Length: 336
Image (cartoon, rainbow, N blue to C red; front, top):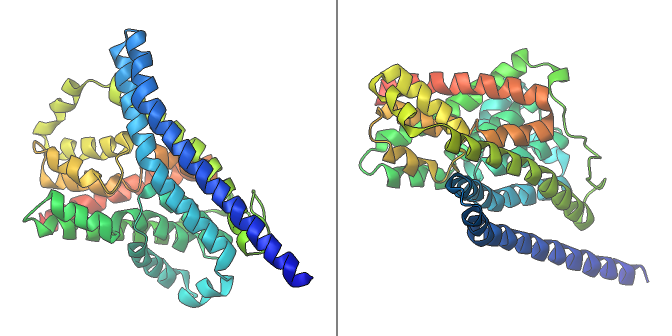
């Protein structure tokens, strides 16, 4: 009788997971349909070309981010449900100063963009990983994984120094920020995810996986939409002629592209192609665009705010931007 109930529960949970998968796919199809058909039709009907442009940018960012956000929430839910806590305590060194670079280097194994990194880092903290190490992973994963590095090599053919520069500058930024948080971070700044709460079923197994997947995807998806809306607004409000004023100065061009990386919200798998198209800027400025973007942009700030709290997001994002710009300048001076 007990075995029959176990089998029945497994079938029921499997069907529930299938339903959530179908619903997630249907939601993604609905976003694409609204963005590609209804949005432009509505903008044309209102005779407002800026609205059509805003909707195009908003839809591109949202649709681009949703699959990777789903990947991140799946990984996050799987970590919380199936990976025992002792796995991480054995994998990472006990000393935080050593755990940070190990976690930063481990970012190479997650083939996703920045949308995936926040829920995964949240799940790592729930499993007992030190916040400094989880934050180093959060920053490095979308910037140094193989997909991003291969895309960079394709965008900059015959320029291996650009790929190496991105790897070194991004990993250095992640490790430095992890160390800075370990040294200066305060517990009250970080609202850590509850280890047995916040929509997650206590314990493990398929039931905890389904519960965590549902909660993380719906919770983070709302902040992804807010970040996409903010980025689209900037794209429409700021004139391109204003941006061209800064291309004549090496220092101003670095700062400009570092700011643009924050507001444009280009996926880390695609930002190398955008950087390569900015031929009027110096190699160091384009490197800064590729280093800052996967670590600090509007949708990431929104996701971090929803997951860890506003006090953390504002401080951490500001410090990360400064460290990423400094790393880009130093590595650019060294390699480029």
